[in-house]
Amino acid sequence: MFDLFRSRDKVVRIMLGGLLVLVCAGMLVYLIPGATPNMGGGGDQVLVEFGKDALTTTEVDRYIQNTIRNQRISSDLLPVMLPQLLEQMINERAVAYEAKRLGIEVSDAELANTLQSIGNGQFNDRNYYQQFVQQQGMSIPEFEDELRRDQLVMKMRNIVYESIVVTPEQAKRAYIEQNQKAKIQYIAFDPNEFKSQIKPSDADLQSWFKANQAMFTVPEKRNVDFVVIDQAKVADTIDVSDAQLHAWYNSHLDQYRVPERVNARHILFKTTGKSPAEVAQIKQKAEDVLKQLRAGANFGDLAKKYSEDTASAPKGGELGWFGRGQMVANFEKATFALKPGQISDLITTEYGFHIIQVEQHEQAHQKSFDEVKNDIASDLKKQTVVDKMEQIADSVETQLTKAPQDAQQIANQNHVTFTHVDDFGSGTAVPGVGTDNTLANAVSGLKKGEVTQPVQVGNDKLVIATVRDVIPSHPANFADVQDKVRTQYIQRKAADMAAEKARQAYAIARANGDMEAAAKATGGTVKPSEEFGRNGAITGVGSAALFGPAFTQPTGTVFGPVSSGQVMVVAKVIAVIPPDMNAFNAQRASLIDELKSTRAQDSYSLFQDSILSRLMQEGKIKVHKDVVDRLMARYRS
Image (tube, rainbow, N blue to C red; front, side, top):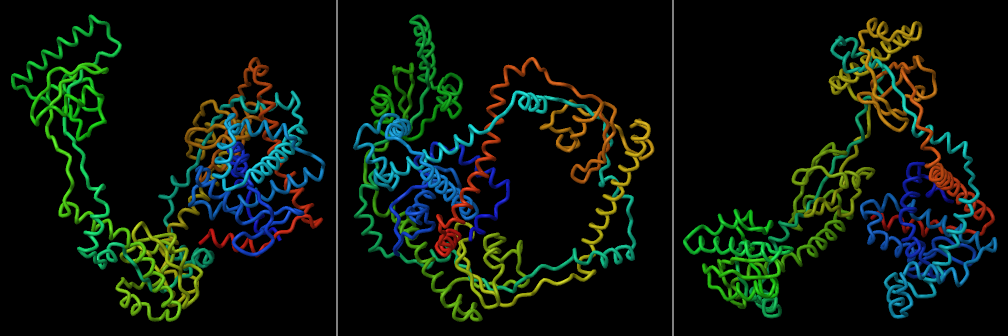
């Protein structure tokens, strides 16, 4: 019954677990929002029953909305993550249900402390509390019931955590593993270095192709008709009458009122934090600059040289257009009193001394209809083009479903673009559209005559596709894949050569411990590594995790060959550097906590699974799979 939720691997579980730990505080407010079970029909349907309690579609929708709003998961990832999120919600519900069965309770005092923590004391204001809860889409009783349930889950987590024991010896071993260093000598054999030595004949390639023909198949393709609805072309078909433009203009006059404004520039001489004597010197400098301007000096050049406004100085002091209320009082009063081209006296503000020049001064006025006519037409088209595109898409989809063979005629009738692509598959470009994974995924799996839903491609196109023919996957002919065969043949033979060289080098080095002799016999080069830890990396070779024997074997031990990607490596332990045990005592407590947390997370995951499995076997939990499937389908679409 629960196969849907068992299809995740360990990496996803760990990722999800980490996510939920990071948003633990958010869980107390948002996770598993509850409501009285609605066993009836309507929009709110029961997904899972937990005894007399239930998890409903409304609760899941609310949680997902909060999750996206708080940017804990991108909406693009939601279809992928939804099964894991839903499973986590069900697991948490099951744990809370089991806690109640065991007699674990959350007291009123504990609930009050949680509310104080969440609300930072602001929940003492009943109106504020009410508004906060309503923003979560819940009533106060529902909200508090959910907090109690979340605290039950936290208590069960704590029980698991407290059951974990980490001994000082285990902590010491972990400290050593984390801080121990090693050094090796190594010989690396890269297959790329052997490719030039491999010169296969046609007979070699033919023979290898026959032996590995299963590797060379032509994937399933489709001959597809596409109907493309382009936003720009649809917009061109939308006519907005002068009457509509005038009506819009007259009903939005305030939108086209332009307040009084000026376009100005200035030179700033800062006085903040200066002593009276320093201010006097700065004022004298400002007056000297003002004299230069009065004598005809270029304002922009002097602003670049003297102004201490780092934002405007590089632009010659340009401030751009601004209206009243945007500058400090003295600056504004002086600026709006100047005529275009006029330069002010020294103006004093809390920032320092300013020299201001007004370049343009525009009085408040109402933009005329003719000035904004084109902008209004563009805005009105934008408002209607999306609706019209959707209407066209719905019409095209309906017509194609009835007559998929008439795609070109249907496109012409709806005044949109038709195009046909043979051998369409992943990575195939559609003329006028390009390559799009979403579109390719929508087409893949369709049978002849089936039609996709409208697929948005980029920001400005809707595409509907219908499959004319399906070309099944089939073995490739040698002539069609000869270049690919040659490439893979050379790669395979080069990898075999590298592996063989590594085996030879290992045998020689293992026999006498002489890495130089092994390198000389196999054409390799001995290189020393830097010191590295278990979680580190070795420059030019790869992850240190591949070289575990460097930490467990005696100095002088030769080991390998180790496969690091395609490169084969033979290594010799040069040194094992023990950690500074003097620092262990200072880190022991935090290390024990870290180990407990890691083990507790793994144990709690198993604990959840065991509770869920047992409650389902006992019939305490009932999953409505049909409702779950519909919910999944809704979010996928």
